[in-house]
Length: 273
Ligand SMILES: [Zn+2]
Image 1 (cartoon, rainbow, N blue to C red):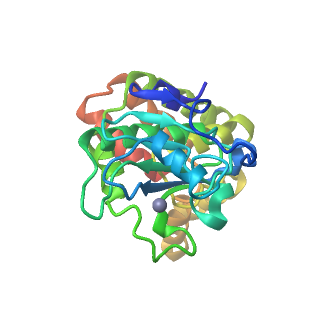
Image 2: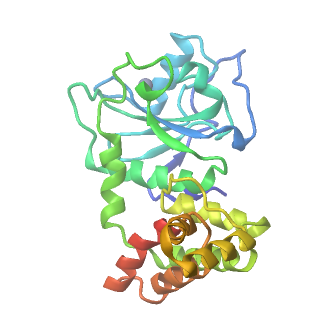
């Protein structure tokens, strides 16, 4: 069961959408998908069914090009399993999962329901795709800078929620669980897994922290000695894992999810990831 399956307006049409009678898409493990590609359908109206029909009949493709279609009413249509290498971004097909919003955004704008569903779907996929790296517009993929797709500010749409988002209770539980694992194991084994979960949750893109107790102790020794080297060591320490601080901030969020203190902790925690 994927996280995205629990989106409220969700319809699994993998088995029912029109398909080519002879051709099938190749399939790879879910870890092949590192990117999410955002498209618009370039049609004023339409549906997953209509796009599938077009892709099969007019393009002679094995099936619909996208993994998901978000229709005007916000309904999320599931078209392919994540590992399927369908056609939507040329050479990047193997590594990119495609989401298409119905509409021609050269002249229209996405509906509120579509934007809301896009936020939910991308948030869920970030958790579902173990190798997730980045969400991009179609025209941000190699070879497609000429393409007028997706023609809406998807970054603003995805960011809108983040700034006003409250961390839900299950999320706060998860955060605390991950932070505890990092505190227990550092960046080894389960700690490393949990650390990556935390980074993904907070959209952290800076280089990962280092985890080397000996080196850290040495840097702390230099800080204590002061002077120019001490100042340098102080900066250097910021690039090392501080699992205690992460656990403290996660605990604050967990204890008082909606308070000002939790808001502060939410802003603070990415600095330590
Ligand atoms: Zn496109």
